[in-house]
Length: 174
Figure 1 (cartoon, rainbow, N blue to C red):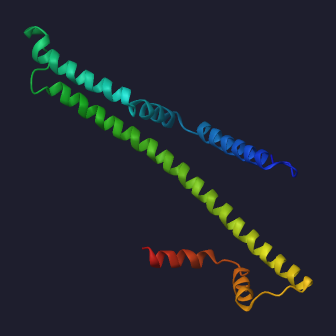
Figure 2 (cartoon, rainbow, N blue to C red; figure 1 turned 90 degrees about the horizontal axis):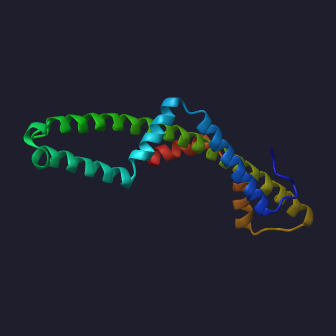
Figure 3 (cartoon, rainbow, N blue to C red; figure 1 turned 30 degrees about the vertical axis):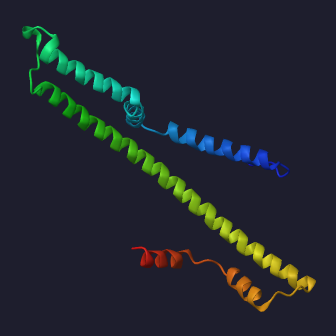
């Protein structure tokens, strides 16, 4: 679906937002069940409320097993081996879930970066064409530019060699 040719700037912006929202929705629909579960768990665990609940649980566990419970009901005496094991297992599972979520987000970011690159390259090609057309119009109208402007415009009208740019960036920023 493309925007109407006579659309206002706000309508074009709304259209772009709708397109992006559609792409995001499509990306969410393509997530595996494991990715959805991982995202839901990490979104829940990564809150202040959940951190407070954990702290309260740890304090309650320690208090129960040191002071609050009668001696026969204390199931995890100091140094709290069961609590240590529980926290360690939870840490491993959460680390795996966070990595799954980060991998998904990294793939999504890579897709966005590729899209940005394609749009940037297209815009660069369009601007080169606009410069060429403006140069022809200026010639037809007999408008002359200064020597420096003419030289700079001629350079900018040349197609950009993306491979050359990437190699130069690699040399300068290893």
